[in-house]
Image (cartoon, rainbow, N blue to C red):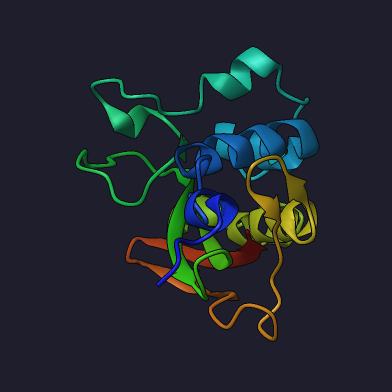
Length: 185
């Protein structure tokens, strides 16, 4: 059998070189495109949505980056946590979920965004819930968004069979999970 051309041997495979940056890039996009999410995460009172916008430094202070006590933070780049949350709080988790390889060059990447709020801080003075407002914001800023290295995210079940929004959480934390997909070479 003759050898494959060099381009097929070396260049025709999806390598997902930015896989380890998916969460970071999504959180950076959230920092630049939604003030409401950050207010709803920082403040636990029922008028959090009315508060002043946070500075970049205040937003960064809410992002977990390996400190000893993860329960002090609100935004995470993975699923699960080993520290116990003893406060009535709200958190967001953004992490790569899976890759379904369709062939050697194209795969569907899935990224999961989870929102959890303690029952006691979920209801707001505007007759909405913290979880639903954050979910709406995540849908608005990420559905169709082009993120460098990730591509264009979408919540399109016809294009990505696992893309969906569903209820998540365990008492006393309720929440929602969004799975965005993206075809990626």
